[in-house]
Image 1 (cartoon, rainbow, N blue to C red):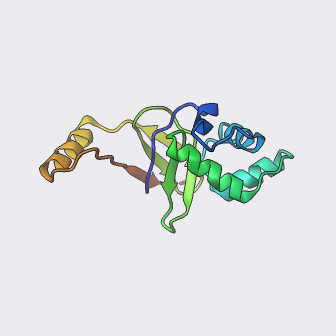
Image 2: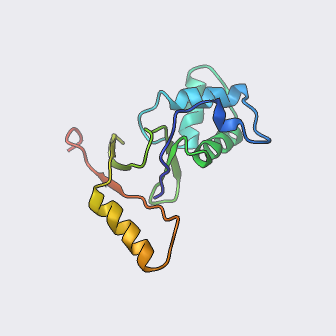
Image 3: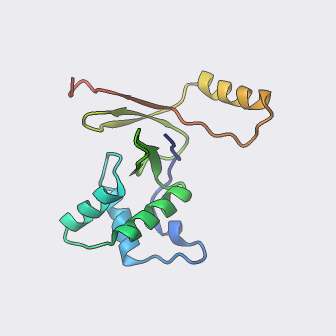
Length: 143
């Protein structure tokens, strides 16, 4: 699983050379802002279609990847390798996700984990190290 801490979803995600702020990208960003769960590209496309708009699946995939690259959405990989996306809060965080209803709670990493990751990287001569902790279980409502 991999995650990238996010920022506010704005037009800046597409200010890089070759990226335009199209209607489709705006619709995708707006829809992500309404979803609390991690969602697949197909779910994004279906959710947008349910609101009466159409965006091609290729555009959805490209936009989600651009948002992830810009650090504006978190990406979580399922056990099958599928990428799921979610607009999250700013700053470094981890997730606790219900495997049944997909309720997701953002967690701050305890200082001990942050120190351990840095000291392990230092021990082996690594720099610019990132880490991800993803916890999953069954929430109290789904038990």
